[in-house]
Image 1 (tube, rainbow, N blue to C red):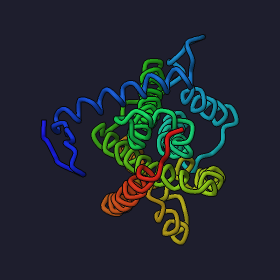
Image 2: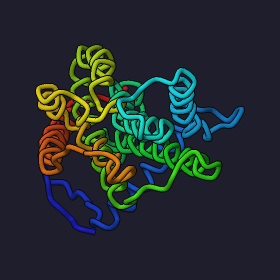
Image 3: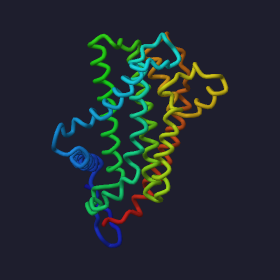
Image 4: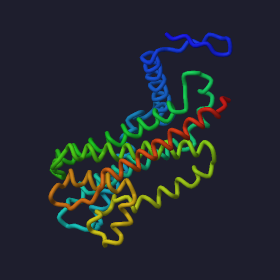
Length: 273
C-alpha cells in the first residue's frame, strides 16, 4: 500500500498487483452479469454465446451451397470460404455494436468506485471475442470431421490474421463506444455504416479477383488485410492474397490511442444514477 496526501487527507492507493487483482474481479463480475442479462438462465443459457454466431455463419454457408453462388474461384471450397469470411465479419463488426451506448444502461454500477467505463468495454469485448472464436473453431472442427473442410495450410498465419482482426475490432469498438457516450449520433450512424462496410470487408471476395482500381480502394479498409491473411493461411498456394500488415497495425494503433483518449474523457464526465 502507498499513502498519498491530497487536500489534507490521506488517500490509500493499492499497489499495482492489488489493482490488477481488483480489476480482474470486477471484469469477471461484469462478464457474469452480461451473460445473465443477455442470455438468461433458460434454454441453453450462455451457450448462445457461440451458438448465435454459429447459426449466422451456418445459414450463409447453407445458402451459398444450395444456390451454388459463384464466389470468384471454382477452385476454393465454398464451405471454407464462407466460414473464413463470415466468421471474420462477426469478429470485428459485433465488437463496436456491443460497446455503442454501453455506458448508459450501466450507470448504476458506477457507484462502485472500482467499476470503470473501460471495465464495461473490456467485459463486452471479451464476450464477443470468445463467441466469434468459439464459433469459428467449432464449425471448423465439425466440418473437418465430416470431410467438408481441410486443415489450414498455415495455422500460425491464420492465428495472426485472426488476432489482427481482433485488434481492429477492439480499437474500433473503443472509438465507437466512447464517442457514442458523448453523442447519440455516433450510435445512430454506426449501424448503417456497419452494413455498408460488410460487402466491402472481403468476406465474399478476394482482392485478387477485383480490377486493379477496385483493389486500391478496398485495401484502404484495414479489415480486408486481416481477412486476406486468414485466407492465405487457410488456402495457402491456392490463392493470391494482398495485405499489408504494417498498414493495418498502424491504423489499429491510431484507433486504439484515440479510443483510449476518448474513454478517459468519458470516464471523467460520467455521473452515476
